[in-house]
Image 1: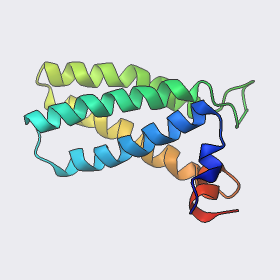
Image 2 (image 1 turned 30 degrees about the horizontal axis):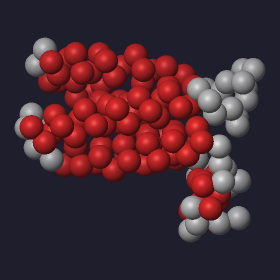
Image 3 (image 1 turned 180 degrees about the horizontal axis):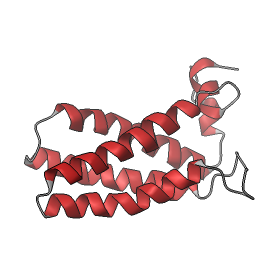
Image 4 (image 1 turned 120 degrees about the vertical axis):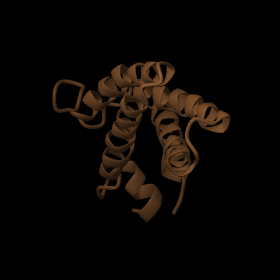
Length: 132
């Protein structure tokens, strides 16, 4: 494992990768920790900020080009940018089930599933974790 490929990548990719990795770790903590507490809300706001960074930074990453400069992954970014405020609003209105489903959907779709695709041989994170 070597961070050298990531540190040599463009800034948008570095921001994207470090924010996604941090959001994944905090997301795991959120799933395991008690809900509705001050730590849950505090970590939740940090997670929302990280996910905004992940989604927004993706619009400057164009390694996979299927629709001009865009790829299907960019639809996940739009999904995230739409769903995050709805999930926060649901929590504010104490609609726990709606909040839970939205946040779980973002975590699974934008972090887990999209993250797995970064480990395809030849992609940057595969080189970071497994080498060349």
